[in-house]
Image 1 (cartoon, rainbow, N blue to C red):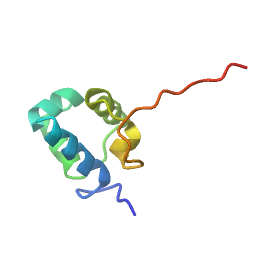
Image 2 (spheres, rainbow, N blue to C red):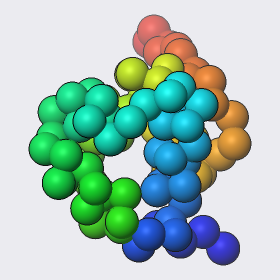
Image 3 (cartoon, rainbow, N blue to C red):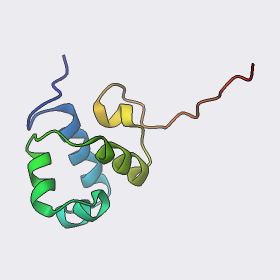
Length: 85
């Protein structure tokens, strides 16, 4: 079962993984998310992020929000095709 809150949440683990893979430090993450370093540190310790954080992370690291949330292991963003009536 996934944990969605706290320092050991899937979200925090995925963000740290993305940061490690892309050599992103806390200062750079703060700039990406348009947050202070203190707010980023709190988030990485389990404070719930705003929905904008998910969007900024997904766009910057080119992954899906579902991946960041731990809902899937597929990093790729899927294009949604709308059917015309």
